[in-house]
Length: 113
Length: 112
Image 1 (spheres, each protein chain N blue to C red):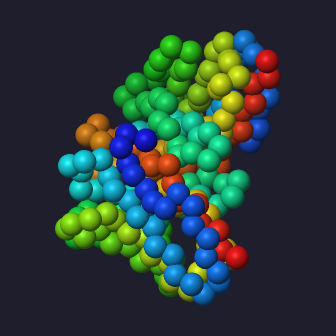
Image 2 (tube, rainbow over the protein chains, first blue to last red; image 1 turned 120 degrees about the vertical axis):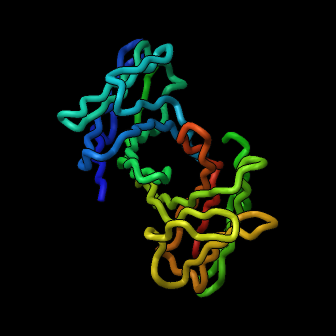
C-alpha cells in the first residue's frame, strides 16, 4: 500500500520568510496530492492540491510542486504570516476510484511576528 | 468544513462504555469517509461508506468498531467497550465531484 513521509515535523520561521514542507510517497500509481491545514481543535482544511499531470500549482502565497520521477511533492508558503501557524498535512491517493487518502505525519509550522 | 456536520464535538466515556459518533455529509451527498487521528499523529483511514453500503472497511479495527450509513439519518461510527487507546479525534469527510475530500470539525473522544 501507499506510504507517505513528511518532513520536517516542526518548522519555525519569522514573519515574512518562506516555508517549505516536503513529502515523499511510495506508490507510483498515486495521482492526487492534496495539502491540508489543521488549526488547534479544528478539522483539516484543504488548502491546495495537485494532480499527477501537473508539475506546479500556485494559489496566491501558496504553491505546490510535484516530481513524479522522484515521487516527492512540496508545499511552499511565501511571505508567511502569524495566521499561517498550524499543522500542515500532505496526502496521496491512488487511482482506485475511491478518494481514500494516505496522510503524512504532519508539520507544525510556527510563524513568529 | 464544506457543510460536513459532526456531533458530538466532545465525548467523554469510561472504559467499557460505548461511544457513538455521528456524521452528516453535505446535503445531497451520500458518501462518507471516517478517519481517526491519534494525539500528535496524522489521520488514518478507517472506513468508506455509501448509504446502506460499506465500500471499504480495510482501516477498521477488527473488534469493537462498526460503522453504518442508513438510508435515512447520519452515518454512525460505533465503538463498543471503549479502552483508553481509543481516545482520539474522529473525523468524517465528504467527497466532492473533482475528488477532493472535505472534513468536518471532528469528534474528540476521551476515555477515562
